[in-house]
Image (cartoon, rainbow, N blue to C red; front, side, top):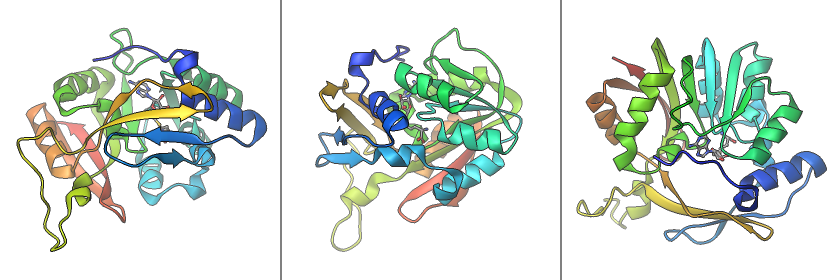
Length: 243
Ligand code: SAH
């Protein structure tokens, strides 16, 4: 697994987050992928307060218990909401700019570290992975490394709360059936690249995974997957606990 951090000149999202936190406005955060047309992430949405979060995220925050790890915490929106609820949270990020913003916004325990860094070995009751949190796994082939890391970071009764989407709707035919080539790579493996002003990030892998496939891998690596809630568009929240 890649265990590196982002360098400031290749951190478009962190720079956008930093701009927005200072000026309350930001330029366009552009998103490119070989599979989709160019898109944009509204930077303001990265600062969503609890009441503006999607129901899946609100549910995850309410379910989080004990010491919570917020993986890829961004602007700190979930960490701050958890702190307001009186919960104990540690936020981790690979973006130095986002870490600075989180510190300024009052996230108490923020660390600039990659989830997959060997040195990162604290223990948590809840691991939160939100905003298509499965993305950080990158590719299906990283499943063994991902679950190994989760076992290292979780207390024995601990669990992961992760949201994701089933991208099969992209392959829907007119008659409502789905045409997926099983000889291809898994259909939820997407490459992305972001740009903010003239800052262009590296291309990265981002995994969207359907609940059934997630459950199969979970059970193969000693976890039980529960479907907690489904969203409006093939999205869902899952709870993964150690068996
Ligand atoms: N959770 C936030 C941000 C989601 S964007 C929110 O819901 O608004 C995903 C974030 O994960 C980015 O800020 C990115 O820098 C961070 N990230 C990506 N890979 C990571 C890794 N391996 N370890 C820690 N953070 C990571």
